[in-house]
Length: 447
Image 1 (cartoon, rainbow, N blue to C red):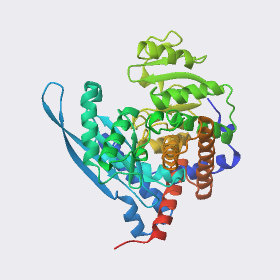
Image 2 (cartoon, helix red, strand yellow; image 1 turned 180 degrees about the horizontal axis):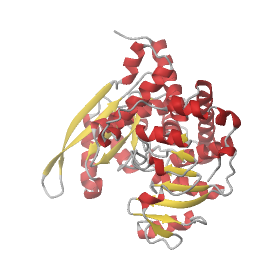
Image 3 (tube, rainbow, N blue to C red; image 1 turned 135 degrees about the vertical axis):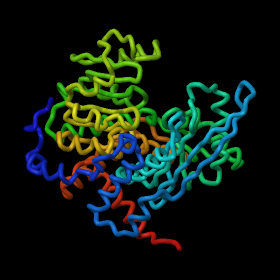
Image 4 (cartoon, rainbow, N blue to C red; image 1 turned 180 degrees about the vertical axis):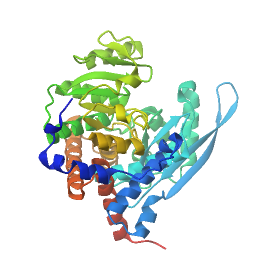
């Protein structure tokens, strides 16, 4: 566990003031359901940051709400002859800085509030890393694990057709998210292209490389997390040697972050997955774990670590905790139990607004999602650019450009935190809102 003496003197001096300024007003009688509502969390953080920026009332109202919210009902012929109707969403939050950008998720618990919050976070995330996109998000209420490949394809194509007039390279560019992958994007691209009567590779990102996808895209979010961890340690004066890491979630983001951190010399002591946790105080051989998962289909049963309760694991002592799965992992119910020095958010919205206050009081150095996991959308931007110019970079060039943008963004957020005497999350929101509001004011309001 890192000690307070490792924190730079200027940060120690301002610690109390920052924690006070970071606190977000929360109703004492707020229910757990309200606490874990991602849209309410986004609103509260936006409002706090906008107030710190002295954002004028008109711009506040414009940026606070999405530009467009679509609800579509998708009839699908199932393999057994039944007709099912699935509900899908696409929320476009902002087009001030460029086309909308955001993933599409397939999950049973998709809701409009969740999609609305994720679209807003995408706007702020794109602004933090200073790429020319606004935010969007989509989703369909379904369980993709219980659907055949044919059913998923038919549902995806009909969903894409319903969105035809609202998506496109200059309008809104979807990407994979929870429950979707490069095959899903291939179906979306093909459906859009058939309607356009020409191949339009830049309508989506996260495609197979053979169809105009970018090298390095799959690893990009995890790579971005590892870059941000490097800079956080440097900022706090902590060495990589002996830096213990616990990662919650071993999907695309978590597994790639784990592999890259392991290769850099971090000690990954814990992996928490939905079906079980692993712990080894001496460090887990991530390459061996990846081989085991490929063969067994799960991290469970890995001989190189002891089996532990995944919920308990994230409260164990470590230098860096990386929630890399879903929203609402760190809440009022467990935030006080965290024993990490750094919380690096690989997932979207893993920390509730109530938990934020608790983490601030504990002095945990939070690397917020709209900075820490922005490697994915940055690489998606690279893919969009490459598709549009018809020239593709090698993986080394993609990684070089990603490192540059993530590094600059880290320093931009830290600079905002110091200048405005707020914590990193509010600093990231302030930076993003400032950038979006500046362009929106320059463009003016069409009426």
